[in-house]
Length: 366
Ligand SMILES: *Cc1c(COP(=O)(O)O)cnc(C)c1O
Image (cartoon, rainbow, N blue to C red; front, side, top):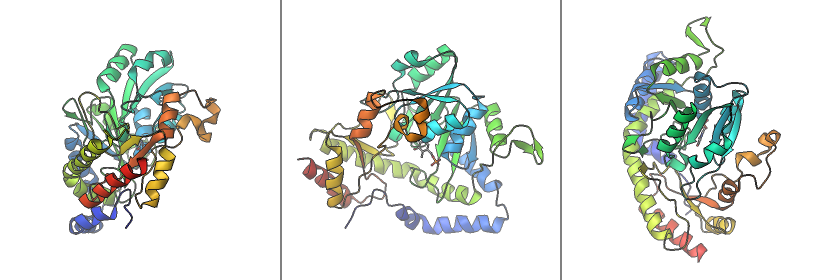
């Protein structure tokens, strides 16, 4: 029996009755774009994130793009971004006509290292995007302090951090705008695309709400060049059901992470180190090993699916060849992409399969 990386169907099986009812409710309602279901999800998710406002959008990439546009980032501006992140973080910056400026991570936490900001900041720098990579909050105190000193905006890309917290407060409103993805594999995932922005700034929430809907507050009156990126009410209804399970599912992920830490720390792996005051959502459980490729292949032979997040850092992607970076420019990000691998940690991973993952990893690494 193979152990999948993530069993998405199991979430539907667990919640089938409630999800079917939610879908039917939307179909019966006559509201198929925005409307009450989206508004209710927005207020429930804002409440969950300890934020005042939430704007539902089409996906996580658009959420970052809309946040950047709402903050006035545009052509020629520079935005500090992690050198190691999913490429969406960079693409949103490029879509605004701005330039992503890569910052190396800390090798221990995998998150952006604020002590390196001052080397890369210029007169053109307008914002920082902090990514809570793998679900672990980035060092927000240091990031926000630097941003204040240099008058920069801060966006958190929280696509992997639903339910995580920093210094006792949920991720959701520490910075100017916090962006979310509800891609099916995220901790809070839809059964299709979805995304959101949370913030405590009413003006910015309003700008984002206008931007996602053709730049129009009143129908056929367009104040800005917006886009069509609205959270689908069917997905909003499904997300409301899943949101009620999120804390319980994250507890399960945390228990699995603890079991993995206890098994792999003593066995010579680099286990994920937690930053101070950080409570991870454990979106991914990421180990690091110099023989990564052999280990992933051997695990696959044993029926354990391990994935790599991410095998090529954005600065070495063909899509970014125009920036002129070469291998060696960001050695920490490159080392991580050569050595990291992620183990199954979904909330529906059975205890038996969790132990099989542990035994398999210890076996192939010995
Ligand atoms: C998933 C993800 C995104 C993009 O989300 P989509 O909904 O797929 O557009 C952005 N940033 C990070 C860090 C992600 O993990």
